[in-house]
Amino acid sequence: MHPGESGYIGNLKIKNRIVMAPMISNLGNPDGSTNENHISYLEARAKGGFGLIITEYTFVNNRNSRGSVNETGVYDRKFIPKFRRLTERVHMHGARTFMQLVHAGGKASQQYNRMRSFAPSSVDYIGTTPWELTQEDISDIIEDFVHAARNAKDSFFDGIELHGAHGYLISEFMSPTLNRRTDRYGGDLERRLRFPQEVVDAIRSEMDFPVGMRISLYENGDNAYHPEYGLKIAENIKNLDYVHFSAGIFNPPGSSASFYDSRTHIFNQLPRRPAVTTMVVGSVMDLEDAERVLSGADFVAVARPSLADPYFAMKLLESNVPLRPCIRCNQACRDLALGEVRCTVNPETGLENYNQKHYVQKLNGHIAVSGGGIKGMEAALEAAKHGLKVTLYHNGERLGGQLLSIADKRKAIEFSKLIEYYEKALEMAEVEVKLNSENGSGIICTPDKVYPDLPEKDEIWVDSNIYKHHDQALEWSENHKVYMSSRSLSSLDRSRALEYKKLASEKGIVFVDHAGKDFDISIIERNQYDIRSAIVSGRELIRKYIERNSLDYL
Image 1: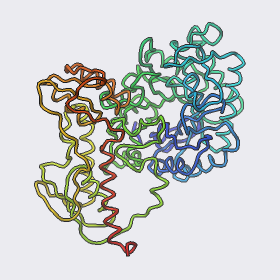
Image 2 (image 1 turned 120 degrees about the vertical axis):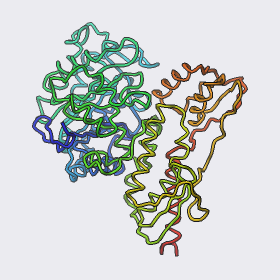
Image 3 (image 1 turned 45 degrees about the vertical axis):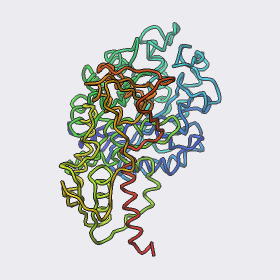
Image 4 (image 1 turned 60 degrees about the vertical axis):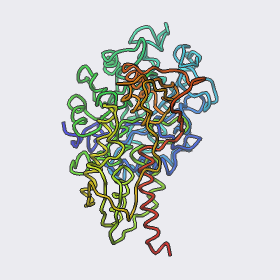
């Protein structure tokens, strides 16, 4: 099945098979309402050709269902006018949009809710223990979902998706690990599915529009359920228009697997094609990945790549335009405890409302850019967008700068895709590239910060969260004894930290506590100079050049 073919969810026609998956953005207002930043962020992906946009998880009551700061909520009718603006803007570009509804259950944040969290069973939720739900609580929550679904429909959403994955309330009932009940809501598969089925039935009894559910195909960690169980869940809940397979509960990687895991890692675990309309998410990076998923599913859901390039769907279908790739680094996109959504390779993500107010000023003339790293390549592209004739000089044999020296093989594979993107994009922008050549005039694009190399010693002690030092530690461990502080992994998300530590330990690197140790290098930075920093710096150089050479500067 080709991604460009139209498809149906229930009786709703979707123009293609490419779905923007729901992702936490933290772009909402503190009360849960939407705003222009959030709307512009989603609208950019609708412009980019996605057939269906599913909003991030949206909480259904303001008592104890919220999972994160500035999460959107749909518990109040007063939010409908602004949500109508959201759906209107998405519909203008021919896309459909579903609202994902959630009760965070035992994972509800104690900071952002008025009441203590509760769950099917009072068990440990990574350091917190929620109350156990009563029958009265369950009845109230079902009504919360119905009320939220009604508000979503009145906001002109085309359907809803119930969040039944990732250890939130609906999935807590379905999980043998989290549901220890012995009443009518637990004990075997049929009873564990009773609550989600009652939610679906209650919504169906009042509304006739598409209802789907996101489900973890499998969990991760001890006593986790396997894909066969996830498939049973999908095929035993009645009256769903589709199921959306993700993965995970508490332990990484879940759906956001880093470059240490295979592409299409969730689809790879699907035992067979389900007997229900299905979409699958998880490390879908390009056309080949999308077609692989569509060989066994009806729709392909794309998450992080839509952050890297809002035109992912359109470019996938046109195929001749270079795709700014997601490199599965899990850096900016996973910094969501207190941050808004961002992307390492796309500085415009989450700032669409700000950026669309700045028009591209066209200029004539020639500009020389020196430096073939990320900063220089981005500067050259930015200059070409403004109509300048650009020559890019680089004193090496290939563009790429510091990315060419990555020692972590699996990381290097994904990061090399970014270099390939720039090479194609520069060619299409008619930028003249001169390798093994230097030019001392024009825009000089050397890195704003260069971190020192690790010392080559028989025994090396490293206390550094700098990505470069992570790579060098792996390389140095081939011929040296390397000790690394545990806090060196503080710049990595849980998925990357877990896999890096495993890889490093296999190479003989010993992890130690940093207190009381003498290290050969000690650098811990909250905001280190990285790919995103280099991209922003390159663009900023061109912005300043244009200002100095335009009438606005006079």
